Image (cartoon, rainbow, N blue to C red; front, top):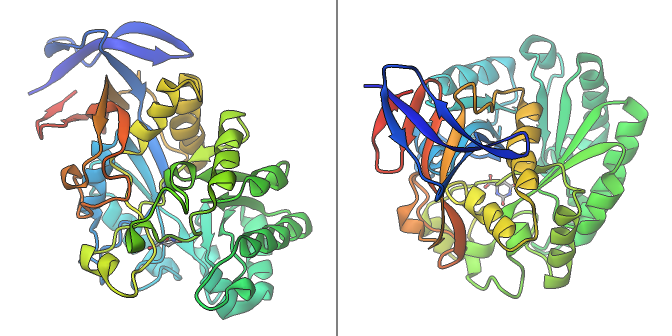
Length: 378
Ligand code: DOR
């Protein structure tokens, strides 16, 4: 069965009442208590699967995305095995193609850089572990090759030389950013710094790198997140003062992209004595961002720029309302409950947070997925 949606859409900076879908389909009307936004795009998620399917699967990840109004994702290559060859890269892309959302994966750092010539990935993700294992020389060679091939290096920017006794201080990020800056300058490679945790990084990146920030580095800090393993993430949560300055950079329009770093682990792992780093927020990331609109910190233009238009351009995917890629939001406040999350990850340090904007439906690929589980052609 097909439906046609009628409601108030935010297009080109204005609200307009529109009809989306084909003639002859049953029309479903949404009152002015709802808004229609372009599909959200998250360039940084971990959908795991393969040997880590106990943490999350491609299907579980896609369900969390749809629940959060997200129509396209950029998955990370630190799967098991790590995606370092053209063969694994293409295998993963092929598997992702079966999902109801648009799926991309960033390639991992190849041991043999010739893999890039075969895979031709638009993006390559560099981890501190890659720097520790292969050295900065290998990353520089990668950057040169990427510059030639036109791919973008995505840095998880923390220099492992600064890790000490299990701690990862802000200096690790600052040192890495300086190295990445030189590398961008010397090689002319395009650089993106992901999940930056310091306001200084946003400032220093201007002119040579783009940056994204996560919901957890914007909302959570060492004072307000005291849930042990649940609050553990890389880069670490920072002091409240630094968090507020990062939020101020976002409000000032200095941040390019908002991305979750949605990183599921099992609850047992997170509660253990040595919890792995990672926070789940894909289901609620848009609502957290909309709560900043509600509070007057951001405009609605900021919201769609940060979590839809800019990341759509980054991944080269469609986020066009008129093209049938949209999400419908009910304008009401709600309390975050991890148990309501749609993927495998059903816990979050945002538990109990008040967020704004309930995602009631997400449309992509000719289908509309409603919160209650109903699916229609559109
Ligand atoms: O906290 C994190 N968890 N940061 C990362 O960069 C990796 C991620 C994961 O894969 O669990």
